[in-house]
Length: 50
Image (cartoon, rainbow, N blue to C red; front, side, top):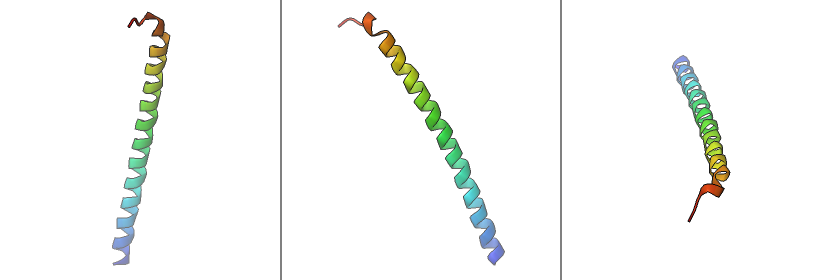
């Protein structure tokens, strides 16, 4: 019985680590893309007419 619980907790921990890594990579990637987009908007600010 104790071994079953240990295996279940081990799998849950491994899944949490995997999901955490995926979320971290997606967050960093989206942040980089947002910074690049913002810098392109600032660079082309003089070309925008209102």
